Image (tube, rainbow, N blue to C red; front, side):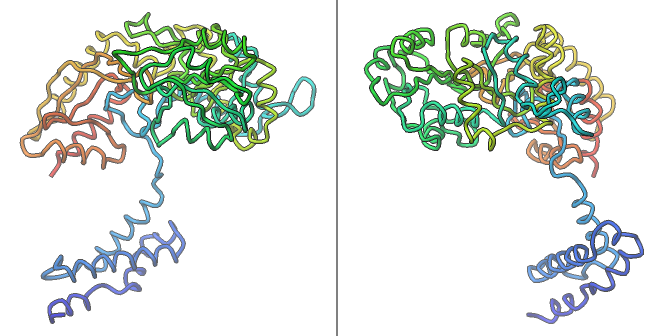
Length: 468
């Protein structure tokens, strides 16, 4: 080590000196002394490494500067890790961004139920212990026509629970074209294996006929499973057995039929100019014995797994000991009930639930909102940024409405001195991060996932990133 580096290392402020400054500033009241000391040591180590790699040539930070860096570390500890972001990506049900935002009624119900005691498992009329599932059972049955209903903590749990209950140690017949993998490496074959069921693949990737299922049925068959392909479509030379045909086959052979719908649609999307998506009501009307789907995708509620179907089968599923491990908590139940209440009228659901509103909103309204934001940006932000409008396409995301492009309007952001990657990085570093996408060295704000309530954060955020 040369003399210059040795001298710089000796000049690194002592921990005690930094602590004295922090104590005067009241920082020791923000965290335990041991935590503050560890933060001081971490900053000192950072400076030490920088000295050794040539990061400091003339001098090192003073005790006051080190104290400021320690103070920033302590404040970071107080900042929530899970926090709100602005979704400008155009992906409505963005899995990484929390999928469906909750509607106002769902938020209200969560607040009311979680701030005090509740009748989670208490039957008020009888004055005895009740079942938590009953809080959403009635409305789920009314909305869908199901005989019985159960909610667990997510759709993977729903699938696992049904398979374990109805087909443990037995064969489950599934088309090869429906052995899907979705986000987070959720694979139907692996979930089936964990459930104790035995996978029996039939057909080919692109063609599976009814007779493929019929030939596979044997003494060990416990269930016929049809799976929504979620985030992809097979096109071209294809064939599949429809649910009604599988139900008839199941009836003839006395084998239950399960339909894992994934997203769980309750809305007729073709009324809003989108391709029609099979609804939960379609599946139950076709005679499926058990139907499973997510609460936080097209339903627009909290993360949950919904199980609907025949009362005799649901009773068995509810009694499975696994159900306790997978059960839904009170806050999720409150949010789910608040969401489901919106579906008493379809118009109410489309208006109140943000994800549905985003998917079904007329393009003219999206364009009107885009022009408003464009005008605000041009008036309030300069520093070499330019903004322009263009048409484009959004996506549902979350494995929902596969291959469906939703027309949208986009604001393109370009800078004279900053690359698109640098702009995108700075937007993510804001106190309220703005998550956007990049194309042709421009940052894109997709108005299909932006509402007027997001405009103040967009304006202040863009203004901050252009400051030197």
